[in-house]
Image (tube, rainbow, N blue to C red; front, side):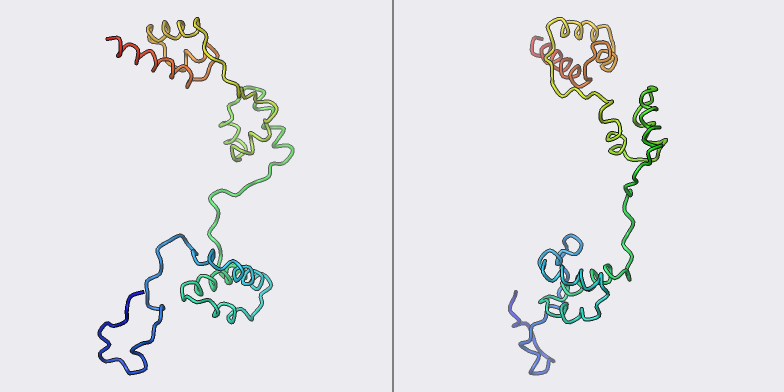
Length: 191
């Protein structure tokens, strides 16, 4: 805090040495930053808000800062339902059994996961949970053999795209790209 030795002209004698934070600008941090500094008070205000307890102002007024008091007051009104919360970006929706079966059948028919997501209006996480046993994800990395490296080199020289090479070799596109980039570096270093 800075000294209050500024010009106190025009102020009554009892105000000259008073300090108040009510006119200070609020801290520019995340929303409701003060709620994190007073966890015990936050729990009390949350309970009072849920049960519509009318004796909440005494607890709020015990807080030392005006912006902390304001944050707690707004939190109380959110808990009582007087202030509506902004809607979430996407609400979690539980899929019915029929929808789960439909998702699984669509995947077995050869539909892409993105098509299934659009069809069922669901999230990617939901669909992957349903298809957990059906989708095989290779977590182990197998090193490229010398023959595969040579084939990548030949196919790349012929003008074949990375995705097509990866499909022919049954490898990830990132693996093929890494090998092609390595070949380009060798070519630059050797030139």
